[in-house]
Length: 264
Image (tube, rainbow, N blue to C red; front, top):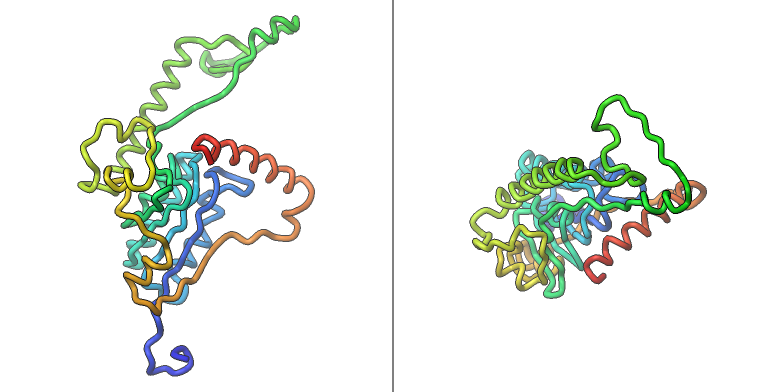
C-alpha cells in the first residue's frame, strides 16, 4: 500500500546477494565477471538501506576472491551502504575472503569459518611412466618453463619457488583479513595457519561478530517491516544441455570435493 500512496513511507529494503559454491572462473563457480551485474544491481536498484551477503563457499581462486570482495567494497563506499555477511555451512579460505568484504559477519553455531591459508595440490606420475616403458620428452626455451611437470620428478628448486609464491599470497590474504577485521581479531598465533573453527569459536577469535541469521537479524537492525530483495544467478535453458552441461557436471564434482574437505 505504501508504494501506491506517495506520502506514506516505504518499508526499508535490504538487497541480498547469494554467494554459493566454489570460487573460480567459468562454469557455475563464483567469479567476478559472473557476479558483477548481480552485485551492481544489488547496490543500485530500489534504493536499499543495506546489502546482505548469503555465503556458503569452501573457497577457490584467490584472485577471484579478491576481485569480488574489492567490487563489493568499492560499491559500498560509492553508495555509502553497510554490508552484512551471513555464513551458512561454510565460509572458508576464499569463502572467508568474501565474508571480509562485509562490515559485519554473522554465523550459525555450526558454521565452519576460517582456513586463512593457501594451498597448491596436484599429482605426480614419473614412476608410473617408467613402469609402463614410456619416456617423457620435454624441450623448452627457458629453464623454468617445465616447472612441476607431473610426469617428471619434482625438483627441489621448483618446490622452493612454489613455496615462495604461496607464502607471498598468504601474506596478501592475511593483510586483507587484518585490514577488514582490525582490532576485532584476537592476538592468536593459530589464526592464520589455515585452521578453521565453528561459529562460536570464530566469534571468540574475532573472525565473526556474532551468532545470527539473515531474516531475524535484518529485522532487528532495520525494523520488523524490512523487505529483502534477493539477487542470484539465473540459469538459462541452453545451459542445461550439451558441452555446457558436461562442463558444469565436472565443476560440480570438483566443488563437491572442496566442500568435503570440511566434512560437508
